[in-house]
Length: 257
Ligand code: NAD
Image (cartoon, rainbow, N blue to C red; front, side):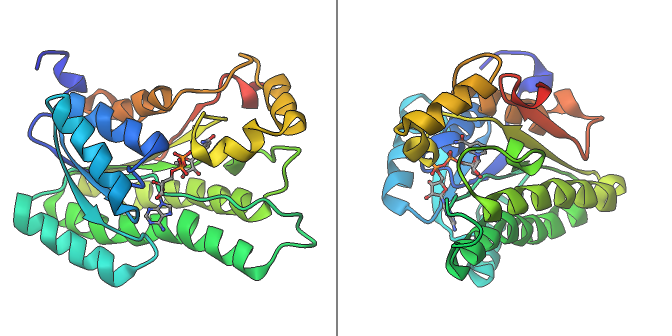
């Protein structure tokens, strides 16, 4: 494949969590098209197989591992397996995430804990396990998929656990970036606005929610998963070699209003 070397990932191994569908799948496809061997790490193994086949079909390199980002033992096994198989992991994209919509006064403890455990705890679990090896190798790039909800409170849908988790991801990103800056490991985040995936299905089929989202988005449309994937590619590639600890907003102008 040809292209600007600053945006190429040839010979690199990239792990993308939650890559079976949605934004993660678009990221996996984009990084594979840039030359990386992409590891699709998701708890949905059936959908992961479909995503892997699509990358092979397009001429890219990919494999799958079953991974639940809340399972630290499983993460340790996956890290060991990948270093055995490839001898390296250069890129980690912490993308797996869920949302639960419930008013704060009614929110169940499960709606709180499950979102915090996956969206914030899962990012730390994977960043720590892979980052430990990257720090030892003195080489690596990590991108955490945060959200505009880490910066501003969106409405009308109530989602206090999600907003709190994503705000945590932003400071987790900066904290790791500072800790690992001198060990050659860069850590950044992307913060998407509303994107057309299954995560937003409920809101997209609710006229009140969707109408508010579009009024609040200056560009007046949803983002496409590939538009988030392009920002991730920039942040994992050498093109962004002096960028660490940043949260790159990709939101059609939502947070500019
Ligand atoms: P999605 O629901 O389409 O896909 C999420 C993927 O994560 C699925 O493949 C699912 O199996 C996987 N996953 C969920 N929990 C997991 C776990 N515990 N371990 C491993 N995999 C798990 O969602 P999406 O819209 O593609 O969201 C991807 C990321 O983007 C999330 O972190 C989300 O918060 C973030 N985000 C999405 C939007 C949006 O509008 N869609 C906006 C901002 C941020």
